[in-house]
Length: 420
Image (cartoon, rainbow, N blue to C red):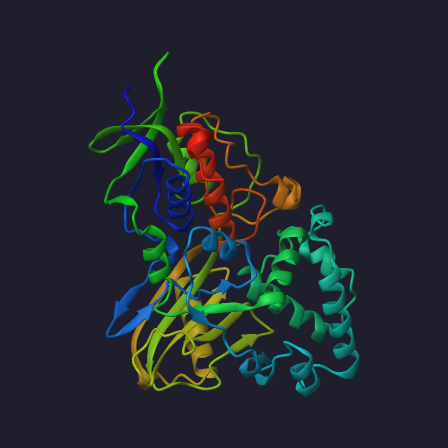
């Protein structure tokens, strides 16, 4: 089996494109295979002049993903949302969202004692050592603050906002706390043009074949080198393969033997409603303290809409049925100032996978997630937002992609060709 490529990457989402770019940067000849379109959950669509992400998307400025992109020469371009415009929805009434000292003083959603508790919470958050918290859940960690109900509801809403999940009983505190710290220290960017330009820049110069269904992997015969990647059109061979096809179940389907990763839990889901609107609605940003829902004006500040128009994203963290989630998100759009007769285009995603899994206490938190090499095949690594010890969401996808791509290049071409 003569390898045709040094590295084949299966899957062209953020993790796969990052793995391919990293392996290429380190001297490997790389082919990317994708059954659908490049970009995965980071791809965009254009409808009537409006660019829609796959639900609400933001890049954490101080997250691991931004650092990885910088190493690859990719420069995200965007603008942070105005936190001072955010509103907290509690009991059917909107209030200023306490997102910093100034808004904490102004808001009426909290009483004096609750404001003091929230101030102390943020002080302790900044000093927390997440690596020491892998043995407790976010619910247990938050319970240790003995917050008044109104303060607890604000903190839990901020956890949802930064982790894209409301499951504090399952999420390990090392993951949740580190994500809160990343969000509070640097904030986020809403990317100009949505995430499509970032995907295009990340994939620039790569050989990507779309519409290719990969059915499985097979190690080389005795004495042979490489891995056979079985597709509908026959096998393609490589010295090393990176699998980045989604969550644990999708990766397991391609491997010849089932790796023992333990109980990783199910995927994190969300219901998403994205709309293009004539005019710019106000307030535009509403975070519910009573339910796991949020609506955000993505453009402006990000440039995804025609002049004088806007793109608004509403999300429910944890999808239920399409009918009840869509109805709730439609009502939330109205809270953000979106009039139904101003909507030009809309798209509803009833149950989008936000992440392959959450880091869980039983599995060891972030450090207990499967390593990029935990495939059971020496010539196969993997990447995804549930792989490796770094970060959540896009940060985890990009960090594991870098690690998997570097390891693939090291094994495929040797350290002599690798860029220091």
